[in-house]
Amino acid sequence: MFEAALILLIPLAVGCFNTLCSRKLPPTAAWAAALTALIAALTLSTKLYLQGGACFEASWGHGGSLAFSWLLCFDELNAAFVVLASFISLACLTYSTKYVEHGSQLYSGLLLLFTSGMIGCLMSVDMIAFYLFWELMVWSSYALIHLYGEGAEAPRAAMLYLLISHVASTTLLFGLLSLYALKGTFNLLAVKELGLDSPLEVFAAASVSIGLLIKMGVIPLLHVWLPDAHSEAPAPVSAMLSGLMIEVAAYGFLRILYGCWSLESLRSVSWLVWGCGLAMLSYTAILSFSQLDIKRFMAYSSINEMGLVVFALGLFAHGAAVAAVAHTLNHEIVKSLLFLYAGCIVHEVKVRNIRTLGDMLWFMPEASAAGLIGSLSIIGIPGLNIFVSELLIYMAGVDVGLLAPTVAAAVMMAVFSAAWLRFINRVMLTRRRLGRVRVSFAMLIPMFALALICLALGLHPDPLIEAAERAASVVS
Image 1: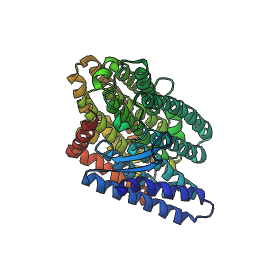
Image 2 (image 1 turned 90 degrees about the horizontal axis):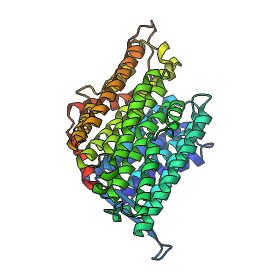
Image 3 (image 1 turned 90 degrees about the vertical axis):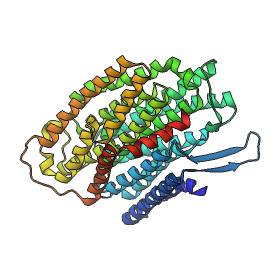
Image 4 (image 1 turned 120 degrees about the vertical axis):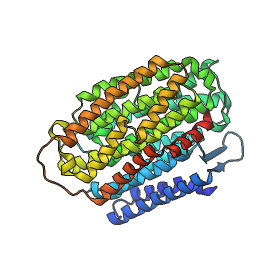
């Protein structure tokens, strides 16, 4: 069905146009074209989600070594991810119309290319296309950080991000080529029930895992790109880096590792994966207390939450896959909201140091109300969305017999919650006798929408759990 392709092709085409014509386009026209493209992508993806999905295939060549087939699928595994990617990208673009003051034509084009790269990774089940869109995602986000970064360290952070991203990309590419050598096809849907019996199978699994885990920011030492990139990027880009891009890597873990290998064979090395997740969530829970930059603090919290996702993914069980999908989707919503809230503070107060902030509930009450909902959600307060998925992860850990590691994860998440309570107290409640400021509606509306989703999924989690069950059923 060609509608599946349009979800990707419309923002990709407009992104290319805005980027190439950035010097001649009026800013209003660039914003309007970009917003229209993402509204179209969101409308089409929501329609297909309600209809049950579709696939689109384009082939070049007539067999032999030159034949190539590009297969896009909008299925139960990626449907919720694609809808959320379209929605959050639209929210961040809307927010950007008042946040980005210069170079908006090029910015809007690069943001659409970034979105297209992520949607392309989510929908491509062909290894070549997946890798090409992965590279588009990396290069467009690098350009956004380098060109629109908010501090003097932005060029250095962008270069570090690019270098480590290409370590991840190269490692992932080796894994994908090994899969092709094993099965003789680039179609991920045709690769099933691999084991760890041959050296090539082990190499493929290790390469794919390491490449994706680097991109999720949970490989020790190679995680350093994430705090720098997230803190130096413009707030809407930070929201997409943390709320969408690292989740694309989590999706890739499900699509490739869960989809192509036998879970029974992967359980023999599961301790390596869940151990990595547990180590990073523990490390960042402790380190978060020393972070004084508001965006850097949130960046470390992203590593913490992805550590919990990796802990769940490393269990290699159906219940764990359900929990991982649910928590990944929740993290997309909450962390996007929190980075947009941080952007309001940076934009209006011009201060990033947590110690010198305070009284934000009085200074910018509307934005801080949304930020408070996001903060309470990420702590795991019952009635908000993160609580549900965290509980599912702990239940999955107990179900597979890993009681001690699960308790350790819960304890470290409690430590992490204490750091967030400290953040709420210092930033929102501590009296500083500041006056009030009115934040633009273009910045508030995306935050309100995300905050309402946090509340809705916390009070009525059935749609979230159903989407996670549908996704997990494809690969486990």
